[in-house]
Amino acid sequence: MSCVTRQSSTSLAFLFLCLPMAKASSRHLVSLLFVLICHAAAFGASTSVNPFTAKAALIRYWNRKVPNNYPHPSFLVSKLSPLSALDSSTFSSLAASGHLSDHLSAFCSAARLLCSSSSYTLSLSSSTPSSFSGYENSNFSNYGTGVGGGADSFANYSSGLNDPVDTFRRYSRDSIAHNDSFASYAGDGNVVTANFTSYGGAATGGAGSFASYDSSSNVPDLRFTNYEAAGNGRDRSFSSYSGEANSGEQSFTGYGKNGNGVTSTFTSYANESNVIGSGFANYGEGGNGATDVFASYGENGNVPENTFRSYGSGGNAGSDRFSSYRDQSNVGDDSFASYAKNANGGGADFDNYGKSFNQGSETFKGYGEGSNPNHEITFKRYFGDNATFKSYAKSGVDFKEYHNSSAAAAPLRSPAANRWAVEPGKFFRERDLATGTAMPMPDIRDRFPPRSFLPRSISGLIPFSAAAVRGVFAIPADTAMGRTVAATVAECERPPSRGETKRCATSAEDVIDFAVTVLGGDVVARSTESAEGSKGPILIGEVKGINGGKVTKSVSCHQSLFPYLVYYCHSVPKVRVYEAEILNVHTKKKINHGVAICHLDTSDWSANHGAFVALGGKPGEIEVCHWIFQGDMTWAVAD
Image (tube, rainbow, N blue to C red; front, side, top):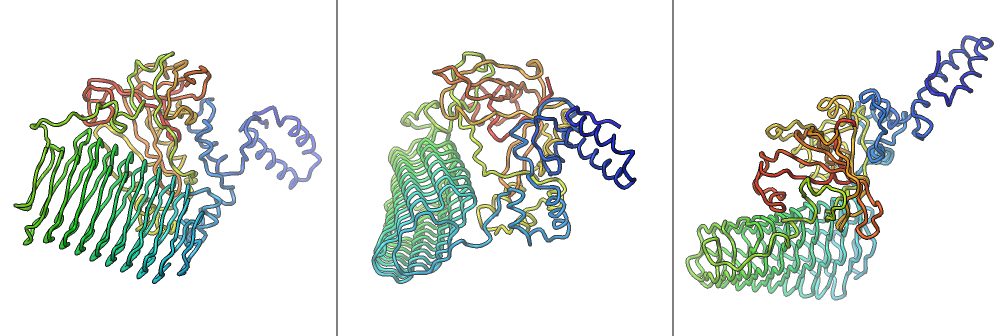
């Protein structure tokens, strides 16, 4: 019997010299110790991984499936489960018996997961105006009911948090001349849920403001239901709301319904945001003298989706203005259904509306219809090829400088100036990967909250369905996290595209198995080392083509938002994979080690893909390259 490593030879020799003098039971114990030492030594002297953990078990599994001598990449090792062997066994048993959720707090902490708060850290019900700075996960139901005068301010509230849930139900209801302000609310947050139900209902006077609300957040879910309904003479402003946010939704249902003289201003709303959806249902319905202004709304956004349903319906002398709305955005869709229907003396002004870089669509159905003919609706410098007007008011509508492709429209900004048409460096050509090339680097930061893989022995016992996952992790379905879980499961269940092989890997073992199934056992996982250089100029240093720079195939894996790590992995044929030193443009010093992939066959890509907007060309005409972002990975054959 011998152990494969020399580090333990001295201690093992001593043990075996003693074996003849030991009793049988002692020899059995020493044999067991020998096996354990060999397991520990298998990691090598340079590895500090405890051999009796879920991480160590995964590395042993990895070594069996991929028996080459390439080091395990640190970015992936850092995401492996920190559970001890005992904890893994305990939580596996709890999952098998259906009792894992009974020990959720301990499980989430030990396994390093992203878990929702099961209860509010703070529940307040007061009538004393206050300043709130630094609170999180709080319930302000019935707060400020009937208060007179004074002001509440929320500064740096829920900032930089993962999965905060804040509730403002019936806040400031029946108040008089009471002000509130939300400044820097939920900035840089992940999976933000905020519920403003019946906020300011029947309030008289006063004003409220949302400044820098939800800025740079990831997957915000914000609901304003019956907000300021039946209010009287109250002003509301949304300034820099959801700026640079990523993939979220806001809903304004029954906002200002039956209000009197309620004023709302949306300035710089959702500017520079990515795939933000906003729904305005029954907004200002039955209101009297309501004034709403949408200025610079959705400017430079990417695929904004806005729905105005029964907006201002049945209102009296309402006024709405859309100025520079969706200006220079990329695609996007707006729907105006039953807008100002049966209203009296409604006014709407669309000034410089829809001047998008890539045209989206607008639908006006039942707009301004009804028995009251006193509308004044003006489309001034309105841009759009894909507008549909159905059941539109027959009078009181004026089209001034309405532009489409058949009209002489004012020139749009050049593609290079549009942030979403070409985020600098997001796509590039293969020839750009050459030593000495200066180029912009896109934002490759990992925007996801930190989480770890679960061992397969646990993840395999959690049914991969939205209902089951929400049940185990106590995630309410109507929160941002609840909706995100459902969206992730739906994407994973989507049939593969033509020629695509895909798998959603719910454990590190699944990732390894899929890569080995597609590419064979001699593979290496690679990722860009860090986010250094993001959003700035870089210089390309030494470049190395994987597999000798030959055409190959790879498996790319992208993070999904879930309580534990889930990767969407898919095969990518006909590519070349490169490693490149990334240098500081001025000092020429190395700041990062990048991994890039070049897709050589783009014939199945959409003609509207951002790569063709950025680089020119059409599907199948050009190759398209991009960096592997921090936190994502590509598997390819070993060199």
